[in-house]
Image (cartoon, rainbow, N blue to C red; front, side, top):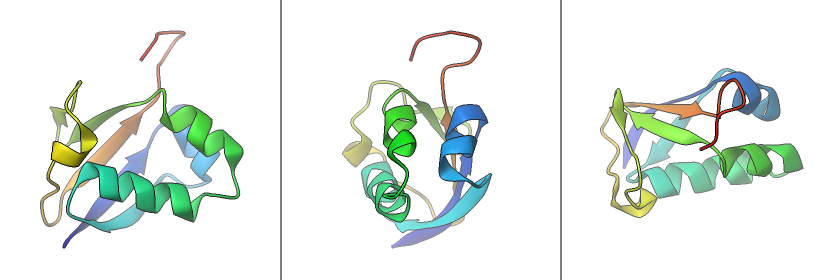
Length: 88
């Protein structure tokens, strides 16, 4: 089980109510599931999250399945909603 940080930007930050929080997960899918559970009281969080793109330690996740993206110990997940009207 790896531990690291999830950083939220723009609308994701507003929906999460925080700029960052810890994760404890082996894959991006597990970390996002943990985040969804943590923010279950914010319906906006899920609406924003499904439109986001993700970076893991500065590397784009792209279209890879989130369950195939392994998270490293001490890693950083950046949660990036579409900016300036762009689409995910």
